[in-house]
Amino acid sequence: MLLLREGRPLSHADLTARSEEIPKCDKVTLYRTLESLTEHGLVHKAQGIDAQWRYCASDPELPGCPGNHPHFLCLSCGAMVCLLGQPLPRIEVPKGITVLGKQLIVYGICDTCTRTKGKENA
Image (cartoon, rainbow, N blue to C red):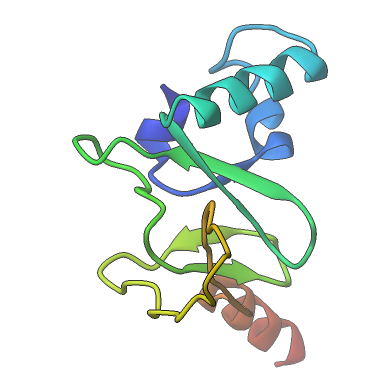
């Protein structure tokens, strides 16, 4: 599975761009498949401030994103990476609230984009 091999969250556009690695299917089928995998706990999704959902494998027995850690989103290229080994901060939830999930997105400019921008300015 592409999400297992990649080891980082991929957007719908990332997945469709690699059409040679995934079976041919229309956009709706891909969205439905990703949502079904999410509902069954096989895929974790994180939404960046760019409003795009990104998906990654979430089985703790396999490489990928278990979903219980922050993610970094590059505002220049849109790449998202897992910040493994860094647990999400503990949050006191008021009585009566049911938490269904949590995520933390740290955003900025990745090293690759920073280096590319530096070369352009040189």
